[in-house]
Amino acid sequence: MYKLLLAWRYLRTRYIALASIISVTLGVGTLIVVNSVMAGFANEMHIRLHSILADIVFEAHGMDGFNDPQWHVEEIRKIVGADLKGITYAVHVPAMVNVPVRGQWITRQVSLVGVDEATYADVSDFREYLVHPENRQKLSFRLHESDYDKDGKRGMPPSGWNYRRLKAQYEREMAMEQEQLRRSQEVPRAIQPQDLKPKDSQQLQPGQLPTLKPPMMPEEKSAENLPPETATAQADPVAPTTAPQTTVAPPPDPFASQASTHPADAFDPAKEQFTGVILGIAIGSVRQRDVKGNVVDYYMCRPGDDVRITFPSAGQPPKAMSDMFTVVDFYESKMSEYDSSFAFMPIKRLQEMRGMIDPATGREAVTTIQMRLKPGADLNAIRDRLRERFPAEAFPYRIQTWKDMQGPLLAAVQMETTLLNLLLFLIIAVAGFGILATFFMIVVEKTKDIGILKALGAPSRGVMSIFISYGFSLGLVGATVGMIGGVLFVIYINHIAKLIEYITGHEVFDPTIYYFSKIPTILQTQTIIGVMFGAVAIAVLASVLPALRAARLHPVQALRYE
Image 1 (cartoon, helix red, strand yellow):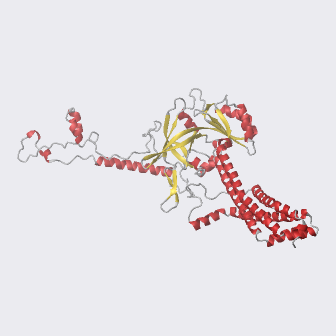
Image 2 (cartoon, one colour; image 1 turned 60 degrees about the vertical axis):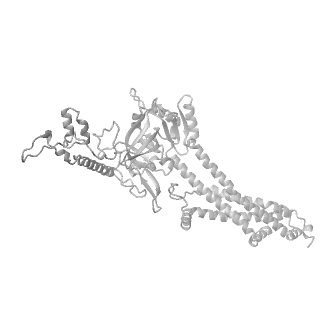
Image 3 (cartoon, rainbow, N blue to C red; image 1 turned 135 degrees about the vertical axis):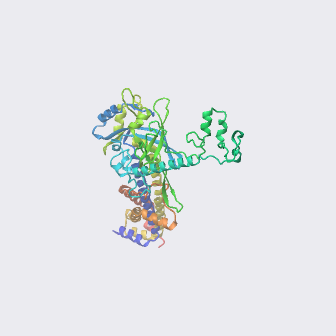
């Protein structure tokens, strides 16, 4: 009992121990905060990476893909069995998207994905990140009437069929104004004095007006040597079909279709749409600050606009295929790598345009087969069974889990977390050295007291346990306070971030760079327990050497000079 009493007395009265407690507290709190934030970021990254990647993916080696996906699907169902939750196939191909912006084309490089509307949402969380609420319920490549930004969070201008009809009407009115301007500029030049000469030196009678020669336009000078009927037609200033036209050329129409499948005279944009395409929101918009410093999304295109997409055909050598598409929705995963590089369209249309359907047999070709497994299924075990059934030397594709495909990125995040833990744990190690120095000083200072205890019959083990209990108490108090402070900091981290922004005038996270509305955090119980256990263990180990020195003191030597 005396050991605990002495340890408690030292803890209360030795204020130098407060520095050791503060060191342990800061170390534990920092480790809890950093691990919680890193766990939150890693979780968000896993969710967003997995949102577009299925659990297991068959990926072709080339863009031509492989044939007969239905047979592959049946074989996969036999192998996976009850663990299979959903399966689909798709076509991935690099492409270029041309977006018309104020009469100019903005070109963006994308990965074009042909998906099946009925099954693609069963293997990924793709549907949850679409902007229009009806597409979140059921995927469709048809343009909706409106309600693309019903809550107003994205600042998206009016979109959908309402916007498309108004735009078509505006373009027709602009075309009519350009035609009227062209016609108004088809006026002959003013009559010059030399045009008043009598024709063929004719003699004028009193009261007779001379016959005037029509004014000659610059283009008429080359008509003098033409046949009479052609020259007459070109010289007639009022003939609307043959008169020379000196007009101001209208600006190029970026919405005019050049695709042979959509003749301009048969396509009415106010009533029809091209094949629908869903663009990553960062393809059609730019996030930056306005003159007032507010973060604003500027939309280069929106649902209802038409864009041109160019991609290579299947076969050798590949040819560039190009057509007009109508933007029907945006995909917003809040991960810039996806939002700025993916575009989605119906798989049948993409297969037809690329020549991936055999005209003789009707067999299709795809570049990837994707599957989603039920929760708890062993991805690696199922992947290995599929690799055994479809060996790489016999089949032109590779089989990977989504973690295999994102292995380098996930490994880099894991290594970063491990290194941060090691570096920050050094803070607690520094506190341990502080405890070691403090205890050695206490042993020197309390040599007489230790000698009295041993002279009264206290065993060496009892004297040693006093200092170990003291070190354990320091570590436990510091770890507990650090745990409480770290947990509270994590809970209110976003409020603290706003307070720091208010004080410093600088944003903690720039929303034009980070696609997070708040700092993601996850409190993991095992991590908190591990950090506290490590801190207490370091404090106990730091007290072992001073405790051994105190236990080895001989009472006669300790009291010799007293």
